[in-house]
Image (tube, rainbow, N blue to C red; front, side, top):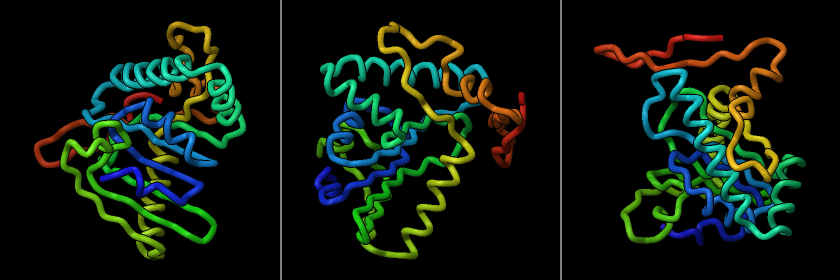
Length: 205
């Protein structure tokens, strides 16, 4: 598995379940637009766990942005404000898929499999399983629907914070920002394990 699979494309959308923010920052150099959904490999079984995970992710990303040189940092923040770079963080327990959607004009590529967007997955030091579909309309439509379903229903968008902060304030956690900006309420699903299935249950709106 090599990041050469990303060569020749201008747009990237990715659903990944292992956070390697430095790897994501490097991807920003390669694409005109980037949309990245960060998931969680464990089970989000309490409302407090969701908030803790989102706070952890937000501070991880904030630290990565602060570590960049000033010009690059400002470039990324401006692209985020212009919605050319968008980050989403999971708020529900959802599918464990890893999906990469790449585009350049009429050319499209789908990559699915076990590989997260991380340094470790791209190092060649661990075995990964991937399947690549080039210009395959059925595969594109299927995985694009799967990706969009997750992004639209199970995530909150991360927005740039004051980079002088040392940590993300509680009220700046993406889920709580979504609540503050919402006109109609926000629903969060938390997994409740049963003997036969895992079912989402509304615990707080």
